[in-house]
Length: 366
Image (cartoon, rainbow, N blue to C red; front, top):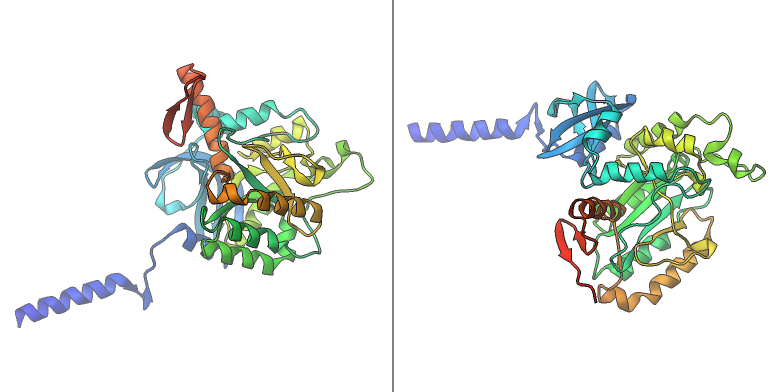
């Protein structure tokens, strides 16, 4: 009798552990947190800098927000460039200025990329990072989703999945998205989320501003984000907030509309902890893609030539794809590896040593 009573007590404790107030207790994952945010009103969304330990890693905090009476932080792993969403109750933040973070984590891929982007901020077009890790055969694909009345070019994604299903699954892709595109293409966003949840694709969400201001009659120096009266804070933070409201977590990457910027605007952007991404292969403009290229096409229905050129290139690489001799690279990994190697080469002072992931590969001169 005593034994039976003990067993019943254990079962009761187990039941209470698994259920709380009549609801099953679901482990708190980032996916759960994002889904919660997508059903809440996000408020007090601001830039915030600090450092914390999270999931066994050092994380640099870049944003804070509130939703349904709870506080959250968004941070970035300075080594992998991965962003994360954290409940404020789960971490202890040590506040820190942006300048102090840059000095303390100066040798990480994240801050190295920030520093390089700052040095490439004086040209009117294509500021920031324009090329990824060049020692591999393959490209990093970025698809811009500017405001458009046309539907998403879904053939880009279905073709990628079809071509790479044996060699790369999920297929990595970077989507430079505007807030206005998200609001006018809810079905397309849901479709993309379905591909992500089915592990068909993995997406790096790149901030492409909220409004993507543009006038065909203005010169570049007074156009796009350089248009007089542009609220840069709104263009950046409202896009991030809109992504969160759709259950999506933004990356630390930013693409200037039209690839147009100046030193002042780049300097402001870097102050938000974001890395500007350009391109060395805008296919619709006839630019060729090479090993390590950051390729640009538009998937908003407004650039059929670029989409056609990419699909033609994809078919031409079919045999190499099957042999894993031509791959698609995650934007975060491509930039991470590039700056990880730059840091490593400075430390070793050896031009023949390259890092591949976390492994040093020594190349023999021939």
